[in-house]
Image 1 (cartoon, protein in one colour):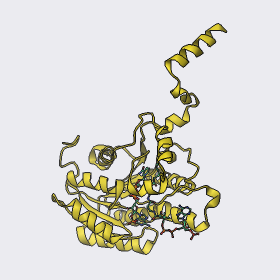
Image 2: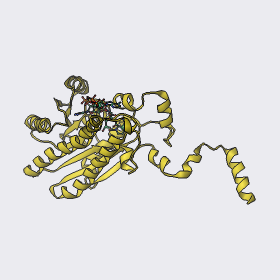
Image 3: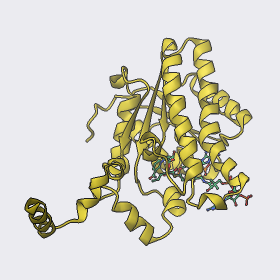
Length: 285
Ligand code: HXC
Ligand code: NAP
């Protein structure tokens, strides 16, 4: 059924922030299928509870706890609870995020804080709290950070500027700790997704069909991503099969960022007749 053997992640305890919805949930479902034990955390306990019930209908174990990653004391309580429940953690997926489109000049300082605090501070708090515990206990582990294609490209993006700045910071965290914490057996990896339709993202980033069409035109493969494609990548990267990958970000965007990067890629719309015509003009000179 999968590209992996079914016990790829057997008995690994994996924490996923924002694991009750969207991409976090899809990643968690794949991890469960591959033998992992999960802990999911986000603000809305009822969402986590329902997700945990549905995710375990075919077996497996999903521990859940409410946690606002913007609050360091809640992050401490989260890891206390997971260690109390499972006795160990092998992998952390920093997936929780906030985002919405807006002209930057319309943002209040509170709006900026809300995104930076979830994405950059929240990721940092979770990373720091677990990293300290792993180092203290002499335990190895892997951290997977979900960023975005506009962070991995280094280009950032207008209209989602707090997210662009925060995700760039998360990528820097990934690469910095890949070096600093490697001696403790702690590995850092990141995934940079392009467009993957989820309720959470699309309600805030693609509020009209027109915007959706315009965004899709940027993707050379001419489609959005499937959650299972991302989940497979997330499974490989945290598995022991990827043990020598450290500090790397893998982009999964159908070629989207490259489309914007090469200036002549704009010629993609020209027909064969257009090319015949242009070719004739150029050869005359
Ligand atoms: C302008 C906005 C706004 C909007 C909120 N604010 N939405 N400003 N345009 N659309 C302002 C509010 O007015 C307020 O400022 C401040 O932001 C905080 O808003 P709250 O609603 O109080 O915040 P909070 O309840 O903490 O919610 C955080 C949130 C929300 C980020 C605003 O959207 C959320 O909970 N998001 C979580 C899930 C999510 O965003 N998922 C998508 C991830 S997708 P004032 O000054 O009025 O008090 C992603 C993918 C990127 O990252 C790439 C895709 C291709
Ligand atoms: P999503 O379903 O909205 O996921 C965001 C999750 O973060 C939710 O489960 C939310 O749960 C949680 N969260 C938000 N604020 C939190 C907080 N303060 N504390 C704890 N948890 C919090 O959107 P998604 O599309 O699956 O996004 C998942 C990840 O993929 C994000 O990192 C996003 O940036 C990234 N990404 C997505 C796309 C895409 O196209 N979908 C593209 C690039 C990158 P609660 O509301 O219950 O807290």
